[in-house]
Image 1 (cartoon, helix red, strand yellow):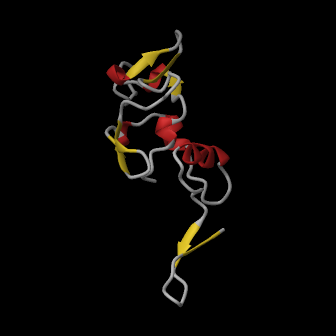
Image 2 (tube, helix red, strand yellow; image 1 turned 120 degrees about the vertical axis):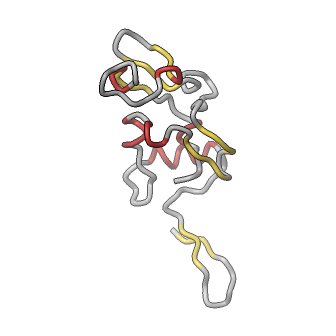
Image 3 (tube, one colour; image 1 turned 45 degrees about the vertical axis):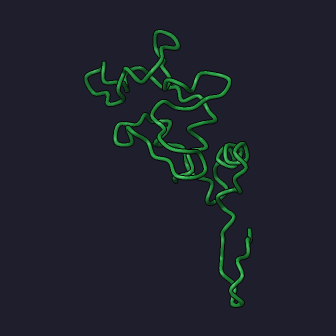
Length: 117
């Protein structure tokens, strides 16, 4: 999705072998922070007010990932809560005053917008 709330709410930690310091890794190592001898996290996400260094734009407005094709596995695996499978998505969105992703805007026949669950 394009809200970016997850990128500015959670620590994004993963095995160091996903960085480009490893033969098969793709995540730019210079955008990570070492946690221990096996794990790193995306820079900016290991703090009280997390925000991934690769996040570009304003949360809830229009954002993008500057390393989208090279993003780590936690980012690839994090699902938008469209079917109720990931309540952490709703938690992140709520932090920024955004409605849950499974709430859909529809246009009723009278032309007024209505929000339904």
